[in-house]
Length: 535
View 1 (cartoon, rainbow, N blue to C red):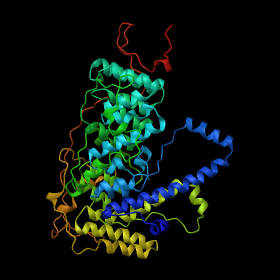
View 2 (cartoon, rainbow, N blue to C red):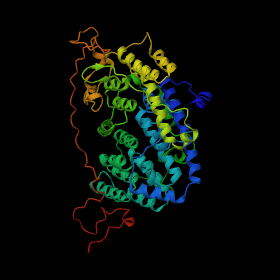
View 3 (cartoon, rainbow, N blue to C red):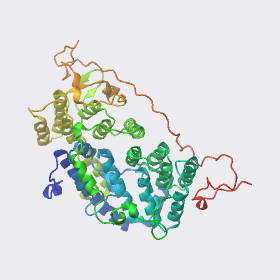
View 4 (cartoon, rainbow, N blue to C red):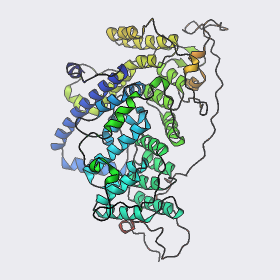
């Protein structure tokens, strides 16, 4: 943190929310660099036998993947920022394009409000992948999800590998909106799934029109263990325009194809910032105060599942998910840390454990991921009251949240930070947001379960009468004058099931009886995975 303060990143023309995000991203990258330096040095002196044993055990037992990311408070503050265009430029790796790892580490799928920006970032990621691997199969998922089929075909024409040639012939041979094309895409997807090529399998499930969205998202979530990528792909596919999926057009170069559809002289081979102009034009778009989240059913399903499975008490991430689901009042309640059980009571909270000064520098570097997680926990804890203020809750809710955080820091002996939180929140000109200005998701009014006894979703701080009397006041409560009448929660209509999950079995479904000479359902990958013939 001292190194960042001595060499501050550029905050030019950024609001305070964007500045917090840039600070967290810079801190994350510095800690990851320390970890990678230590890991590289330890690998050079490691015992080869230990390395082989570790690799063998990892294939037998798959643990949950943990990715290095910035603090979730950075994602929430970025969502609330009105300078997202400049923020994207600041988060982009220096002199590089976004790849998926860098985009995931700064949380772009969770805070970029514009669907045009999301599509532009997806194309930038795909181009970065192709530039590195020279394989169209590796980048197909991002082009298919954003429905940029002509660009995908143009890149496939330049891939001279065996898989690239087969993929190009496959695109030309099928109309994926027809029954024949959908079955061919599904069979090839199962073939790739058996080979554990999960990203390519998901792309083939999505190439059909209409796509097998739920199956593809289940593969990304369960097999690839990447919920961020699943949410990113869901946003892309649900907001992408419908395009023609039959590719027999008149593009011509060399073997009959042209790169003109890619734009920018081929796009994937360029060195400039991809989508820079389109991102900057979004700077003058809808502000956060006027923003209304618009997610499709599959994106909502993913966020609800993440909320139900949340066990790490990351209040900033949960607040972010609730905002995307159109439940701002529940988001404020969760971020305020005010415990809601039988009534309204402010219960003291505990600050995250801090790193001890007696710990050695080598212990930090040897477990860099744990150090990053600890730093993110501290940032989330200290930033919560300030972020809550940006959501404009009731004054008493805001002040209660600030007092709880300040008391927790004070008990840890951090008097100055505890006072600074109070000073930051103590604004005599603070204006509450009226109930009418809050965006409610009337079609999806679910209750928030699993937190504080399950009563959070039925309480709306903004609608409390300030002078109503309670039957029997609780002496330990700061809300003695509140008459908290729980609002009736609306039940959401169950969404229709799309496709059953395929994870009970990875084997391809048996096709209906057809003539053996038919080539409709043959997989272009069958030569790599020949099915044993029946005796």
